[in-house]
Length: 167
Image (cartoon, rainbow, N blue to C red; front, side, top):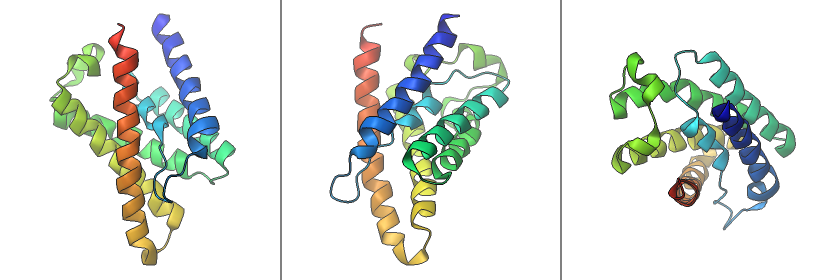
């Protein structure tokens, strides 16, 4: 039951953090952190992916509702939630029998870094491609992806260091 309460708290914490704090941050026209992608990183790995995909879609949909962004957050978060298992198999060499025991805290920093960087860049690439929706703005898309990914990953690793250090 404790894990369920932690997941509900994580869901609402990331939702309110993104909506009320991070959506109001825009540095230099390119940097906007999207910390809600941490939900995909931190959600436990289970054989039944349908609830996870539903919760990821729901989180993105709520953020879209408050941001008035028309479903872009829901689509980009659902996309990385769907492909997350491929990258877990790729970077961590996990099989189905390992899913109940998988935990990012027990993995090496290099593997976790590669995993989070890959999913964050994919998320941001999808999000900013749809937000700009023009082939003429590819340099703007790439700058947004680069700088927002760096800021998002910095926030993620600082947050996990601060909150996971006490455990």
